[in-house]
Length: 545
Image (cartoon, one colour):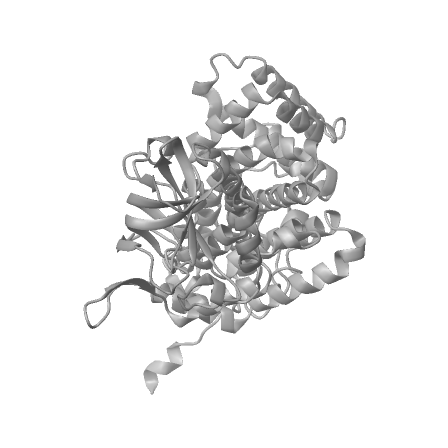
């Protein structure tokens, strides 16, 4: 036909598919190497490479698209009118979740180097499809909270760290593994969980209660069990709510509706009603916030890792596109202005990856100083890294031009997903106030933070200057709340700068310190000092299938 001769496809990049997301990410691979015992390194690399190949495969990318095109549906009743309160997911979503569980993304607490290998895997798997990361994160994070009750931990921990996924709802004791969700937020309180109104009435059996109330956001509502907060006679208390009781009957878990969210479309978030719901107390009455805070800390690290994964995928897509796309007589990646933009995005991605893996290494270490470091570093990192995700995703989409605004490119899904981790587990102000609380109450946390940053002392004058300015800011904590975001931003940047100066190639550390710490930077991406070695920064970020 005459018209078909005009449709010649030229100057389009090949699909970024069929490659190993782990080994192609040099910043991530190097972080795993430095934080892993050499005796375990070959095993960990092989495991993560297998997951990386799976995440980059045609099959998994198809599953991700299918899961997003067919979001979950709420089924409150069966065909006969019986209340069932179930969520139907597309089979592709179950396949993705099963892959994540079989890859060990819920086993960090029971394996050597468990947190580092799991953090790297979580960062990789987020790039395949972030919608399964919520149940993976909640299941992982429930373990330290359950350890407040040794009997409960002995019963549930083997299920939560099992690598077998079974989707059917039946008594957890009859399943090889289990998935967990969480319910803290209520409509009248939001982050102020002490304002929760869900009530817990003690039952005759010690440690058991009946819950009555409503949760505005319940994560992963198809799970086998949930950790929730409710008001017991002595105050806010943490409870375990099983989805199915030991006798096979359904617990009272009334799903009122699913949230219609901006992104995270393949995952379900629900409003749930408790009305005579059976629950088991976790920890002491009145100590619910202290009990569940261990779960919150773990999920906050996952917010950092998830954002780092989204940024990495956005940057990989942008660099890949510009490596193959030609305009104005040459490859886009060789154009000085585009190179500046890509290098700027790559810096943000690498800094996030380095910080996320450092947090995971502190969890593996478990020492007193590392735990003190986490008390400040986790909320600071959660505040800053999650906030950088959205501008990175949007700028990366712009690198593809109009192609980046089209669903088939995958960038719109990244853009929609990008604000989520900043909102989950406490939005920006909550993180900033948590940093202030630690600074005022736990001097050992600041000591650990300054010791960590000080490991790079003298290596870069801009980092040294930024640390000095930060110490001046920390000298006045009396009227600090109004400038808390500014303070926490500086803390996160100084910590990232210290890590990059110690571990990243000189061109990466130099460019980061010149821009983020030295002030030689504009208000948008692509405003780096052009005299630096930006080509090497971009080449380091390029995925090489």
